[in-house]
Length: 606
Image (cartoon, rainbow, N blue to C red; front, side, top):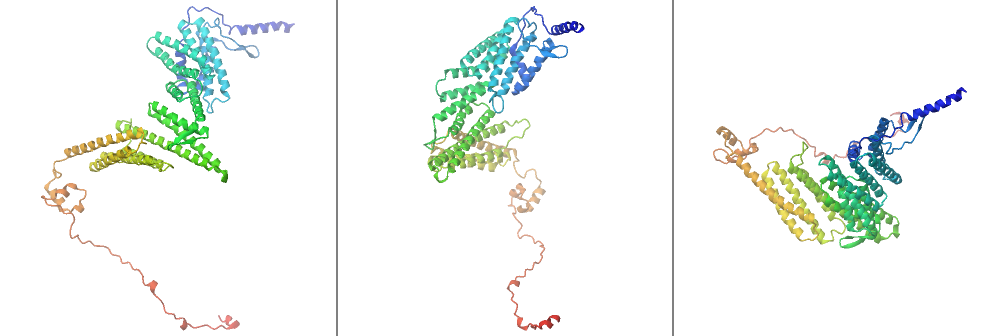
Protein backbone atom coordinates (compact mmCIF):
# COMPACT_ATOMS: atom_id res chain seq x y z
CA UNK A 1 0.00 0.00 0.00
CA UNK A 2 2.84 2.34 0.70
CA UNK A 3 4.40 1.80 -2.72
CA UNK A 4 1.04 2.23 -4.43
CA UNK A 5 0.47 5.54 -2.71
CA UNK A 6 3.96 6.83 -3.62
CA UNK A 7 3.63 6.22 -7.38
CA UNK A 8 1.05 8.96 -8.02
CA UNK A 9 3.24 11.40 -6.08
CA UNK A 10 6.25 10.64 -8.31
CA UNK A 11 4.30 11.07 -11.54
CA UNK A 12 2.78 14.24 -10.16
CA UNK A 13 6.24 15.58 -9.32
CA UNK A 14 7.55 14.69 -12.77
CA UNK A 15 4.63 16.46 -14.40
CA UNK A 16 5.20 19.53 -12.27
CA UNK A 17 8.93 19.47 -12.94
CA UNK A 18 8.31 19.20 -16.69
CA UNK A 19 5.77 21.95 -16.91
CA UNK A 20 6.88 24.54 -14.42
CA UNK A 21 10.25 25.77 -15.87
CA UNK A 22 9.69 24.94 -19.56
CA UNK A 23 6.15 25.68 -20.65
CA UNK A 24 5.64 29.23 -21.90
CA UNK A 25 2.11 30.52 -21.75
CA UNK A 26 1.09 32.28 -24.93
CA UNK A 27 0.76 36.00 -24.42
CA UNK A 28 -0.20 38.70 -26.81
CA UNK A 29 2.65 41.21 -27.12
CA UNK A 30 1.81 44.82 -26.57
CA UNK A 31 3.65 45.84 -29.71
CA UNK A 32 5.18 44.19 -32.76
CA UNK A 33 8.86 43.20 -32.80
CA UNK A 34 11.41 44.94 -34.99
CA UNK A 35 13.92 42.43 -36.39
CA UNK A 36 16.51 43.78 -38.89
CA UNK A 37 17.30 40.38 -40.37
CA UNK A 38 19.90 41.43 -42.95
CA UNK A 39 21.82 43.69 -40.57
CA UNK A 40 22.02 41.02 -37.85
CA UNK A 41 23.14 38.35 -40.32
CA UNK A 42 25.77 40.52 -42.06
CA UNK A 43 27.27 41.69 -38.75
CA UNK A 44 27.42 38.13 -37.40
CA UNK A 45 29.00 36.81 -40.59
CA UNK A 46 31.60 39.57 -40.63
CA UNK A 47 32.58 39.04 -36.99
CA UNK A 48 32.63 35.25 -36.90
CA UNK A 49 34.61 33.88 -39.80
CA UNK A 50 32.93 34.66 -43.11
CA UNK A 51 35.19 37.61 -43.73
CA UNK A 52 37.90 35.00 -44.34
CA UNK A 53 35.61 32.30 -45.75
CA UNK A 54 35.65 30.19 -42.57
CA UNK A 55 32.18 28.61 -42.67
CA UNK A 56 32.94 26.12 -39.92
CA UNK A 57 33.65 28.88 -37.42
CA UNK A 58 30.41 30.65 -38.33
CA UNK A 59 28.41 27.42 -38.02
CA UNK A 60 29.84 26.81 -34.55
CA UNK A 61 28.98 30.38 -33.56
CA UNK A 62 25.35 29.83 -34.65
CA UNK A 63 25.15 26.70 -32.48
CA UNK A 64 26.53 28.49 -29.43
CA UNK A 65 24.21 31.44 -30.00
CA UNK A 66 21.16 29.16 -30.18
CA UNK A 67 22.19 27.43 -26.96
CA UNK A 68 22.48 30.75 -25.11
CA UNK A 69 19.11 31.92 -26.40
CA UNK A 70 17.40 28.68 -25.36
CA UNK A 71 18.92 28.83 -21.88
CA UNK A 72 17.88 32.44 -21.51
CA UNK A 73 14.30 31.57 -22.46
CA UNK A 74 14.32 28.31 -20.47
CA UNK A 75 13.21 26.64 -23.70
CA UNK A 76 15.49 23.60 -23.67
CA UNK A 77 14.68 20.31 -25.35
CA UNK A 78 15.68 18.23 -22.32
CA UNK A 79 13.22 17.57 -19.53
CA UNK A 80 14.79 17.06 -16.15
CA UNK A 81 12.97 14.20 -14.40
CA UNK A 82 13.68 12.07 -11.40
CA UNK A 83 16.55 9.73 -12.16
CA UNK A 84 17.28 10.76 -15.79
CA UNK A 85 16.43 13.38 -18.40
CA UNK A 86 14.74 12.79 -21.71
CA UNK A 87 14.41 14.64 -25.00
CA UNK A 88 11.18 16.47 -25.75
CA UNK A 89 10.69 18.18 -29.10
CA UNK A 90 9.39 21.74 -28.76
CA UNK A 91 8.24 23.63 -31.80
CA UNK A 92 8.24 27.39 -32.08
CA UNK A 93 4.90 28.70 -33.29
CA UNK A 94 3.32 32.11 -33.50
CA UNK A 95 1.58 31.49 -30.17
CA UNK A 96 4.82 30.49 -28.46
CA UNK A 97 6.96 33.32 -29.92
CA UNK A 98 6.16 35.93 -27.27
CA UNK A 99 9.79 37.10 -27.18
CA UNK A 100 12.00 38.30 -30.04
CA UNK A 101 14.59 35.72 -28.99
CA UNK A 102 12.36 32.98 -30.37
CA UNK A 103 12.72 34.57 -33.81
CA UNK A 104 16.49 34.77 -33.37
CA UNK A 105 16.58 31.04 -32.58
CA UNK A 106 14.84 30.21 -35.85
CA UNK A 107 17.07 32.59 -37.81
CA UNK A 108 20.22 31.02 -36.34
CA UNK A 109 18.88 27.58 -37.25
CA UNK A 110 18.59 28.62 -40.88
CA UNK A 111 22.05 30.24 -40.85
CA UNK A 112 23.63 27.17 -39.25
CA UNK A 113 22.21 24.83 -41.89
CA UNK A 114 23.31 27.17 -44.70
CA UNK A 115 26.83 27.57 -43.25
CA UNK A 116 27.20 23.79 -42.92
CA UNK A 117 26.20 23.35 -46.57
CA UNK A 118 28.76 25.95 -47.65
CA UNK A 119 31.40 24.27 -45.48
CA UNK A 120 30.87 20.96 -47.27
CA UNK A 121 31.06 22.72 -50.64
CA UNK A 122 34.42 24.27 -49.69
CA UNK A 123 36.00 20.84 -49.02
CA UNK A 124 39.48 20.41 -50.61
CA UNK A 125 38.33 17.57 -52.86
CA UNK A 126 35.03 19.25 -53.74
CA UNK A 127 31.57 18.22 -52.54
CA UNK A 128 31.79 14.62 -53.90
CA UNK A 129 29.35 12.37 -52.09
CA UNK A 130 28.55 15.26 -49.80
CA UNK A 131 26.60 16.90 -52.65
CA UNK A 132 23.44 15.13 -51.50
CA UNK A 133 24.13 16.27 -47.96
CA UNK A 134 24.56 19.84 -49.21
CA UNK A 135 21.14 19.76 -50.87
CA UNK A 136 19.55 18.32 -47.73
CA UNK A 137 21.08 21.04 -45.58
CA UNK A 138 19.94 23.77 -47.95
CA UNK A 139 16.41 22.35 -47.85
CA UNK A 140 16.64 22.46 -44.05
CA UNK A 141 17.73 26.09 -44.22
CA UNK A 142 14.75 26.87 -46.49
CA UNK A 143 12.42 25.20 -43.99
CA UNK A 144 13.70 27.31 -41.07
CA UNK A 145 13.70 30.48 -43.19
CA UNK A 146 10.05 29.86 -44.12
CA UNK A 147 9.23 29.46 -40.41
CA UNK A 148 11.02 32.73 -39.71
CA UNK A 149 8.92 34.42 -42.40
CA UNK A 150 5.74 33.03 -40.83
CA UNK A 151 6.73 34.19 -37.34
CA UNK A 152 7.68 37.67 -38.57
CA UNK A 153 4.34 37.95 -40.38
CA UNK A 154 2.51 37.25 -37.12
CA UNK A 155 4.76 38.85 -34.47
CA UNK A 156 6.95 41.46 -36.19
CA UNK A 157 6.33 44.73 -38.00
CA UNK A 158 5.91 45.06 -41.77
CA UNK A 159 9.52 45.91 -42.45
CA UNK A 160 10.79 42.87 -40.57
CA UNK A 161 8.27 40.70 -42.43
CA UNK A 162 9.60 42.01 -45.76
CA UNK A 163 13.19 41.31 -44.72
CA UNK A 164 12.26 37.78 -43.63
CA UNK A 165 10.50 37.22 -46.98
CA UNK A 166 13.58 38.42 -48.89
CA UNK A 167 15.83 36.21 -46.80
CA UNK A 168 13.60 33.18 -47.46
CA UNK A 169 13.66 33.88 -51.20
CA UNK A 170 17.45 34.21 -51.11
CA UNK A 171 17.97 30.88 -49.31
CA UNK A 172 15.40 29.19 -51.56
CA UNK A 173 17.10 30.61 -54.64
CA UNK A 174 20.45 29.22 -53.51
CA UNK A 175 18.90 25.79 -53.01
CA UNK A 176 17.36 25.85 -56.51
CA UNK A 177 20.69 27.07 -57.89
CA UNK A 178 22.43 24.08 -56.34
CA UNK A 179 19.79 21.73 -57.77
CA UNK A 180 20.00 23.54 -61.16
CA UNK A 181 16.30 24.40 -61.13
CA UNK A 182 16.90 27.58 -63.08
CA UNK A 183 13.29 28.78 -63.51
CA UNK A 184 12.46 28.53 -59.80
CA UNK A 185 15.80 30.02 -58.79
CA UNK A 186 15.28 32.94 -61.16
CA UNK A 187 11.80 33.66 -59.79
CA UNK A 188 12.95 33.51 -56.14
CA UNK A 189 16.03 35.66 -56.69
CA UNK A 190 14.12 38.26 -58.66
CA UNK A 191 11.58 38.52 -55.84
CA UNK A 192 14.45 38.83 -53.34
CA UNK A 193 16.07 41.58 -55.41
CA UNK A 194 12.79 43.46 -55.71
CA UNK A 195 12.22 43.44 -51.94
CA UNK A 196 15.75 44.58 -51.11
CA UNK A 197 15.57 47.27 -53.79
CA UNK A 198 12.34 48.62 -52.31
CA UNK A 199 13.81 48.52 -48.80
CA UNK A 200 16.91 50.43 -49.94
CA UNK A 201 14.72 53.16 -51.42
CA UNK A 202 12.59 53.39 -48.28
CA UNK A 203 15.55 53.35 -45.85
CA UNK A 204 17.33 56.48 -44.79
CA UNK A 205 20.74 57.18 -46.25
CA UNK A 206 23.42 55.45 -44.22
CA UNK A 207 24.79 52.04 -43.35
CA UNK A 208 21.39 50.33 -43.55
CA UNK A 209 20.74 51.56 -47.08
CA UNK A 210 24.26 50.51 -48.06
CA UNK A 211 23.59 46.97 -46.81
CA UNK A 212 20.49 46.65 -48.99
CA UNK A 213 22.30 47.99 -52.08
CA UNK A 214 25.25 45.68 -51.50
CA UNK A 215 22.91 42.68 -51.31
CA UNK A 216 21.25 43.78 -54.59
CA UNK A 217 24.67 43.98 -56.26
CA UNK A 218 25.50 40.46 -55.04
CA UNK A 219 22.20 39.04 -56.36
CA UNK A 220 22.43 40.60 -59.85
CA UNK A 221 25.18 38.25 -61.22
CA UNK A 222 23.26 35.22 -59.95
CA UNK A 223 20.12 36.41 -61.74
CA UNK A 224 22.10 36.88 -64.94
CA UNK A 225 23.51 33.38 -64.63
CA UNK A 226 20.03 31.91 -64.14
CA UNK A 227 18.76 33.82 -67.19
CA UNK A 228 21.72 32.52 -69.18
CA UNK A 229 20.87 28.92 -68.29
CA UNK A 230 17.15 29.42 -68.92
CA UNK A 231 17.75 30.85 -72.39
CA UNK A 232 20.53 28.47 -73.33
CA UNK A 233 19.78 26.00 -76.13
CA UNK A 234 22.16 23.50 -77.73
CA UNK A 235 25.94 23.72 -77.50
CA UNK A 236 27.96 26.59 -76.11
CA UNK A 237 29.38 29.35 -78.28
CA UNK A 238 32.09 31.96 -77.86
CA UNK A 239 29.42 34.54 -77.02
CA UNK A 240 28.13 32.35 -74.20
CA UNK A 241 31.63 31.88 -72.82
CA UNK A 242 32.22 35.65 -72.81
CA UNK A 243 28.91 36.10 -71.03
CA UNK A 244 29.96 33.61 -68.34
CA UNK A 245 33.27 35.45 -67.88
CA UNK A 246 31.41 38.75 -67.55
CA UNK A 247 29.09 37.26 -64.93
CA UNK A 248 32.10 35.90 -63.04
CA UNK A 249 33.74 39.32 -63.09
CA UNK A 250 30.72 40.99 -61.45
CA UNK A 251 30.08 38.25 -58.87
CA UNK A 252 31.92 39.13 -55.67
CA UNK A 253 30.21 37.61 -52.64
CA UNK A 254 28.40 34.44 -53.74
CA UNK A 255 30.73 31.47 -53.43
CA UNK A 256 28.08 29.08 -54.73
CA UNK A 257 27.72 31.14 -57.91
CA UNK A 258 31.49 31.19 -58.42
CA UNK A 259 31.67 27.40 -58.17
CA UNK A 260 28.76 27.06 -60.61
CA UNK A 261 30.45 29.44 -63.05
CA UNK A 262 33.72 27.51 -62.94
CA UNK A 263 31.90 24.26 -63.66
CA UNK A 264 29.90 25.88 -66.48
CA UNK A 265 33.07 27.30 -68.07
CA UNK A 266 34.78 23.91 -67.83
CA UNK A 267 31.74 22.23 -69.42
CA UNK A 268 31.60 24.86 -72.17
CA UNK A 269 35.26 24.40 -73.03
CA UNK A 270 34.89 20.63 -72.91
CA UNK A 271 32.05 20.78 -75.43
CA UNK A 272 34.11 23.03 -77.68
CA UNK A 273 37.10 20.69 -77.36
CA UNK A 274 34.97 17.73 -78.39
CA UNK A 275 33.38 19.65 -81.27
CA UNK A 276 36.58 21.16 -82.73
CA UNK A 277 39.56 18.82 -82.75
CA UNK A 278 42.31 20.94 -84.30
CA UNK A 279 44.46 24.02 -83.74
CA UNK A 280 46.30 26.23 -86.22
CA UNK A 281 50.09 26.38 -86.06
CA UNK A 282 52.30 28.08 -88.66
CA UNK A 283 49.48 28.25 -91.17
CA UNK A 284 48.62 24.54 -90.94
CA UNK A 285 45.89 22.72 -89.01
CA UNK A 286 47.13 20.36 -86.31
CA UNK A 287 44.55 17.86 -85.12
CA UNK A 288 44.16 17.25 -81.37
CA UNK A 289 42.88 13.74 -80.72
CA UNK A 290 42.89 14.03 -76.92
CA UNK A 291 39.84 16.06 -75.87
CA UNK A 292 41.33 16.80 -72.43
CA UNK A 293 44.45 18.28 -74.01
CA UNK A 294 42.33 20.46 -76.26
CA UNK A 295 40.24 21.55 -73.27
CA UNK A 296 43.38 22.75 -71.44
CA UNK A 297 44.45 24.70 -74.55
CA UNK A 298 41.01 26.30 -74.79
CA UNK A 299 41.16 27.18 -71.09
CA UNK A 300 44.40 29.09 -71.68
CA UNK A 301 42.93 30.88 -74.70
CA UNK A 302 39.71 31.69 -72.85
CA UNK A 303 41.66 33.31 -70.02
CA UNK A 304 42.67 36.16 -72.36
CA UNK A 305 39.25 37.71 -71.77
CA UNK A 306 39.88 37.52 -68.01
CA UNK A 307 43.22 39.29 -68.53
CA UNK A 308 41.53 42.06 -70.48
CA UNK A 309 38.89 42.54 -67.77
CA UNK A 310 41.29 42.30 -64.80
CA UNK A 311 41.79 45.67 -63.17
CA UNK A 312 44.60 45.15 -60.65
CA UNK A 313 48.10 43.76 -60.96
CA UNK A 314 47.32 40.91 -58.54
CA UNK A 315 44.28 39.80 -60.55
CA UNK A 316 46.33 39.70 -63.75
CA UNK A 317 49.07 37.65 -62.09
CA UNK A 318 46.49 35.16 -60.78
CA UNK A 319 45.09 34.80 -64.31
CA UNK A 320 48.58 34.16 -65.70
CA UNK A 321 49.03 31.44 -63.07
CA UNK A 322 45.84 29.75 -64.29
CA UNK A 323 47.04 29.99 -67.91
CA UNK A 324 50.42 28.41 -67.13
CA UNK A 325 48.81 25.62 -65.10
CA UNK A 326 46.49 24.77 -68.01
CA UNK A 327 49.33 24.78 -70.56
CA UNK A 328 51.56 22.66 -68.31
CA UNK A 329 48.75 20.12 -68.00
CA UNK A 330 48.43 20.08 -71.80
CA UNK A 331 52.19 19.52 -72.20
CA UNK A 332 52.09 16.69 -69.67
CA UNK A 333 49.27 14.92 -71.54
CA UNK A 334 51.11 15.33 -74.85
CA UNK A 335 54.28 13.81 -73.36
CA UNK A 336 52.26 10.88 -72.07
CA UNK A 337 50.67 10.35 -75.51
CA UNK A 338 54.09 10.41 -77.20
CA UNK A 339 55.46 7.97 -74.63
CA UNK A 340 52.52 5.61 -75.21
CA UNK A 341 53.19 5.62 -78.96
CA UNK A 342 56.93 5.03 -78.54
CA UNK A 343 56.37 2.10 -76.19
CA UNK A 344 54.92 0.14 -79.11
CA UNK A 345 58.35 -0.05 -80.71
CA UNK A 346 58.77 -0.60 -84.44
CA UNK A 347 55.04 -0.73 -85.09
CA UNK A 348 54.34 2.77 -83.73
CA UNK A 349 52.57 5.33 -85.87
CA UNK A 350 55.33 7.75 -86.85
CA UNK A 351 52.85 10.20 -88.38
CA UNK A 352 50.94 10.38 -85.09
CA UNK A 353 54.19 10.91 -83.15
CA UNK A 354 55.22 13.69 -85.54
CA UNK A 355 51.83 15.30 -85.14
CA UNK A 356 52.10 15.17 -81.34
CA UNK A 357 55.57 16.71 -81.48
CA UNK A 358 54.20 19.54 -83.61
CA UNK A 359 51.40 20.02 -81.10
CA UNK A 360 53.97 20.13 -78.30
CA UNK A 361 55.87 22.87 -80.15
CA UNK A 362 52.60 24.77 -80.51
CA UNK A 363 51.89 24.57 -76.77
CA UNK A 364 55.48 25.51 -75.89
CA UNK A 365 55.19 28.53 -78.18
CA UNK A 366 52.09 29.62 -76.29
CA UNK A 367 53.91 29.17 -72.97
CA UNK A 368 56.80 31.37 -74.13
CA UNK A 369 54.53 34.07 -75.55
CA UNK A 370 52.46 34.22 -72.36
CA UNK A 371 55.73 34.30 -70.39
CA UNK A 372 56.82 37.31 -72.44
CA UNK A 373 53.52 39.07 -71.71
CA UNK A 374 53.78 38.26 -68.00
CA UNK A 375 57.39 39.48 -67.79
CA UNK A 376 56.53 42.74 -69.55
CA UNK A 377 53.71 43.21 -67.05
CA UNK A 378 56.27 42.77 -64.24
CA UNK A 379 58.53 45.31 -65.95
CA UNK A 380 55.66 47.80 -66.05
CA UNK A 381 55.06 47.22 -62.35
CA UNK A 382 58.72 47.86 -61.50
CA UNK A 383 58.66 50.99 -63.68
CA UNK A 384 55.71 52.30 -61.65
CA UNK A 385 57.51 51.59 -58.38
CA UNK A 386 60.66 53.40 -59.54
CA UNK A 387 58.62 56.43 -60.60
CA UNK A 388 56.58 56.42 -57.37
CA UNK A 389 59.67 56.43 -55.10
CA UNK A 390 57.38 55.79 -52.13
CA UNK A 391 57.36 52.17 -50.98
CA UNK A 392 56.55 52.72 -47.27
CA UNK A 393 60.01 51.90 -46.00
CA UNK A 394 60.67 49.01 -48.38
CA UNK A 395 63.77 48.82 -50.51
CA UNK A 396 63.13 50.61 -53.79
CA UNK A 397 63.92 48.74 -57.03
CA UNK A 398 66.81 49.97 -59.15
CA UNK A 399 67.40 49.98 -62.91
CA UNK A 400 69.74 46.98 -62.44
CA UNK A 401 66.68 44.87 -61.62
CA UNK A 402 65.18 45.75 -65.00
CA UNK A 403 68.43 44.86 -66.74
CA UNK A 404 68.15 41.30 -65.38
CA UNK A 405 64.49 41.08 -66.40
CA UNK A 406 65.26 42.02 -69.99
CA UNK A 407 68.06 39.46 -70.04
CA UNK A 408 65.41 36.85 -69.18
CA UNK A 409 63.23 38.20 -71.97
CA UNK A 410 66.13 37.84 -74.41
CA UNK A 411 66.67 34.23 -73.33
CA UNK A 412 62.95 33.48 -73.70
CA UNK A 413 62.95 35.02 -77.19
CA UNK A 414 65.94 32.87 -78.20
CA UNK A 415 64.14 29.76 -76.95
CA UNK A 416 61.06 30.71 -78.97
CA UNK A 417 63.15 31.24 -82.11
CA UNK A 418 64.73 27.78 -81.65
CA UNK A 419 61.39 25.95 -81.71
CA UNK A 420 60.90 23.56 -84.65
CA UNK A 421 59.17 25.37 -87.48
CA UNK A 422 60.02 28.92 -86.36
CA UNK A 423 63.42 28.97 -88.06
CA UNK A 424 61.88 27.78 -91.34
CA UNK A 425 59.36 30.65 -91.41
CA UNK A 426 61.07 33.84 -92.72
CA UNK A 427 58.40 36.12 -91.28
CA UNK A 428 58.79 34.70 -87.77
CA UNK A 429 62.59 34.78 -88.04
CA UNK A 430 62.47 38.51 -88.77
CA UNK A 431 60.05 38.95 -85.88
CA UNK A 432 62.41 37.15 -83.50
CA UNK A 433 65.36 39.29 -84.64
CA UNK A 434 63.31 42.49 -84.20
CA UNK A 435 62.24 41.47 -80.68
CA UNK A 436 65.85 40.67 -79.77
CA UNK A 437 66.95 44.14 -80.92
CA UNK A 438 64.12 45.78 -78.99
CA UNK A 439 64.90 43.88 -75.77
CA UNK A 440 68.64 44.66 -76.13
CA UNK A 441 67.78 48.34 -76.55
CA UNK A 442 65.63 48.26 -73.40
CA UNK A 443 68.45 46.53 -71.52
CA UNK A 444 71.02 49.16 -72.58
CA UNK A 445 68.58 51.94 -71.75
CA UNK A 446 68.31 50.74 -68.14
CA UNK A 447 72.11 50.48 -67.99
CA UNK A 448 72.21 54.12 -69.06
CA UNK A 449 69.76 55.00 -66.28
CA UNK A 450 72.04 53.23 -63.81
CA UNK A 451 75.03 55.29 -64.99
CA UNK A 452 72.93 58.43 -64.77
CA UNK A 453 72.10 57.71 -61.13
CA UNK A 454 75.85 57.36 -60.45
CA UNK A 455 76.44 60.78 -62.10
CA UNK A 456 78.52 59.22 -64.88
CA UNK A 457 76.85 61.36 -67.51
CA UNK A 458 79.22 60.88 -70.52
CA UNK A 459 78.83 57.09 -70.30
CA UNK A 460 75.06 57.44 -69.88
CA UNK A 461 74.79 59.69 -72.94
CA UNK A 462 76.83 57.27 -75.05
CA UNK A 463 74.55 54.39 -74.04
CA UNK A 464 71.40 56.38 -74.78
CA UNK A 465 72.71 57.19 -78.27
CA UNK A 466 73.37 53.48 -78.78
CA UNK A 467 69.79 52.73 -77.72
CA UNK A 468 68.56 55.28 -80.24
CA UNK A 469 70.40 53.47 -83.03
CA UNK A 470 69.05 50.07 -81.97
CA UNK A 471 65.48 51.39 -81.75
CA UNK A 472 65.67 52.65 -85.34
CA UNK A 473 66.95 49.27 -86.56
CA UNK A 474 64.28 47.43 -84.55
CA UNK A 475 61.56 49.64 -86.06
CA UNK A 476 62.81 48.79 -89.55
CA UNK A 477 62.80 45.07 -88.75
CA UNK A 478 59.26 45.25 -87.35
CA UNK A 479 58.10 47.03 -90.49
CA UNK A 480 59.44 44.14 -92.60
CA UNK A 481 57.26 41.51 -90.89
CA UNK A 482 53.50 41.18 -90.54
CA UNK A 483 53.64 38.79 -87.58
CA UNK A 484 54.17 41.47 -84.90
CA UNK A 485 51.36 41.73 -82.38
CA UNK A 486 49.99 44.74 -80.49
CA UNK A 487 52.33 44.19 -77.53
CA UNK A 488 55.39 44.49 -79.80
CA UNK A 489 54.09 47.76 -81.26
CA UNK A 490 53.25 49.21 -77.85
CA UNK A 491 56.66 48.43 -76.37
CA UNK A 492 58.49 49.72 -79.45
CA UNK A 493 56.64 53.02 -79.13
CA UNK A 494 57.44 53.11 -75.41
CA UNK A 495 61.11 52.54 -76.22
CA UNK A 496 61.24 55.43 -78.65
CA UNK A 497 59.53 57.75 -76.15
CA UNK A 498 61.88 56.70 -73.33
CA UNK A 499 64.95 57.22 -75.54
CA UNK A 500 64.00 60.82 -76.29
CA UNK A 501 63.13 61.47 -72.65
CA UNK A 502 66.35 59.99 -71.24
CA UNK A 503 68.53 61.78 -73.78
CA UNK A 504 67.05 65.11 -72.79
CA UNK A 505 67.39 64.27 -69.08
CA UNK A 506 71.07 63.29 -69.38
CA UNK A 507 71.93 66.47 -71.31
CA UNK A 508 70.01 68.60 -68.84
CA UNK A 509 71.81 67.02 -65.86
CA UNK A 510 75.15 67.57 -67.58
CA UNK A 511 74.35 71.26 -68.04
CA UNK A 512 73.21 71.57 -64.42
CA UNK A 513 76.33 69.81 -63.18
CA UNK A 514 78.55 72.12 -65.23
CA UNK A 515 76.67 75.19 -64.02
CA UNK A 516 76.86 74.10 -60.40
CA UNK A 517 80.64 73.45 -60.56
CA UNK A 518 83.42 76.11 -60.20
CA UNK A 519 84.24 78.34 -63.19
CA UNK A 520 87.88 77.15 -63.16
CA UNK A 521 88.92 73.73 -61.91
CA UNK A 522 91.85 75.19 -59.99
CA UNK A 523 89.95 78.08 -58.43
CA UNK A 524 90.04 78.03 -54.69
CA UNK A 525 93.51 76.40 -54.60
CA UNK A 526 96.59 78.27 -53.50
CA UNK A 527 99.68 78.89 -55.63
CA UNK A 528 101.83 76.65 -53.45
CA UNK A 529 99.36 73.81 -53.86
CA UNK A 530 99.28 74.20 -57.64
CA UNK A 531 103.09 74.38 -57.78
CA UNK A 532 103.37 71.22 -55.71
CA UNK A 533 100.83 69.40 -57.89
CA UNK A 534 102.50 70.52 -61.08
CA UNK A 535 105.89 69.29 -59.86
CA UNK A 536 104.42 65.84 -59.39
CA UNK A 537 104.16 63.81 -62.60
CA UNK A 538 100.74 62.80 -63.84
CA UNK A 539 101.46 59.09 -63.28
CA UNK A 540 101.78 59.80 -59.54
CA UNK A 541 98.54 61.87 -59.26
CA UNK A 542 96.01 60.14 -61.46
CA UNK A 543 93.18 60.86 -59.02
CA UNK A 544 93.68 64.64 -59.22
CA UNK A 545 92.12 65.90 -62.43
CA UNK A 546 92.56 69.71 -62.16
CA UNK A 547 96.32 69.96 -61.89
CA UNK A 548 96.73 67.30 -64.54
CA UNK A 549 94.95 69.55 -67.08
CA UNK A 550 96.25 72.97 -66.24
CA UNK A 551 99.70 72.30 -64.85
CA UNK A 552 101.83 75.16 -63.49
CA UNK A 553 101.66 78.63 -65.09
CA UNK A 554 100.05 77.30 -68.26
CA UNK A 555 102.80 74.81 -69.04
CA UNK A 556 101.92 71.31 -70.09
CA UNK A 557 101.94 68.90 -67.20
CA UNK A 558 104.61 66.24 -66.88
CA UNK A 559 103.22 62.83 -67.56
CA UNK A 560 106.08 60.72 -66.14
CA UNK A 561 109.57 61.29 -64.79
CA UNK A 562 112.15 60.55 -67.47
CA UNK A 563 114.57 59.01 -67.04
CA UNK A 564 112.92 57.13 -64.22
CA UNK A 565 114.74 57.08 -60.89
CA UNK A 566 116.94 54.11 -60.12
CA UNK A 567 115.48 51.78 -57.56
CA UNK A 568 117.26 49.09 -55.61
CA UNK A 569 116.00 45.65 -56.53
CA UNK A 570 116.57 42.74 -54.22
CA UNK A 571 118.13 39.98 -56.30
CA UNK A 572 118.10 36.41 -55.09
CA UNK A 573 120.08 34.03 -57.30
CA UNK A 574 118.22 31.03 -58.55
CA UNK A 575 120.25 28.09 -59.90
CA UNK A 576 118.88 25.60 -62.37
CA UNK A 577 120.88 22.44 -63.17
CA UNK A 578 120.09 22.24 -66.88
CA UNK A 579 123.09 20.07 -67.88
CA UNK A 580 122.21 17.07 -65.73
CA UNK A 581 119.78 15.62 -68.24
CA UNK A 582 122.40 15.82 -71.02
CA UNK A 583 125.33 14.35 -69.05
CA UNK A 584 126.54 10.85 -70.07
CA UNK A 585 128.87 8.86 -67.80
CA UNK A 586 131.60 6.48 -69.17
CA UNK A 587 131.12 2.73 -69.04
CA UNK A 588 133.50 1.32 -66.34
CA UNK A 589 132.00 -2.16 -66.13
CA UNK A 590 135.22 -3.68 -67.58
CA UNK A 591 137.25 -2.42 -64.61
CA UNK A 592 134.94 -3.97 -62.08
CA UNK A 593 136.29 -7.18 -60.41
CA UNK A 594 134.21 -10.29 -60.89
CA UNK A 595 133.63 -12.56 -57.88
CA UNK A 596 134.06 -16.27 -58.37
CA UNK A 597 131.55 -18.69 -56.99
CA UNK A 598 132.98 -21.13 -54.42
CA UNK A 599 130.29 -23.76 -54.35
CA UNK A 600 129.01 -24.94 -51.04
CA UNK A 601 132.10 -23.87 -49.10
CA UNK A 602 131.94 -20.47 -50.70
CA UNK A 603 128.59 -19.94 -49.22
CA UNK A 604 130.07 -20.30 -45.73
CA UNK A 605 132.73 -17.78 -46.57
CA UNK A 606 130.34 -15.01 -47.14
